[in-house]
Length: 125
Image (tube, rainbow, N blue to C red; front, side, top):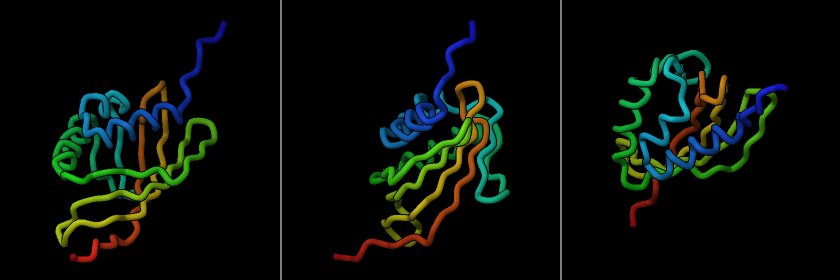
């Protein structure tokens, strides 16, 4: 009898929920120990869980950090999200359109690629 398969979209969904909750332990539980994290298409930004954790501990300090899921699709073990991410950029708070591509192996994210749009800064009030 085959082992039950873990839905790659569920793994990515849990990862986004933990990102939005700024829960580093829950976030990292979705990533493989040897995961690779790329700026699209091939700019290696972090390799291994320790580097991914370090990158996100800093990111999670942003007070209004939030990834709004616009759409998700997957084929096999590849999951593609489109998100609008609220961030605190060096120039000020704003939003950026992001396409995130996740490769899930054995119930963990093994590789991820992120294509960022141009940040749109909030208008000063």
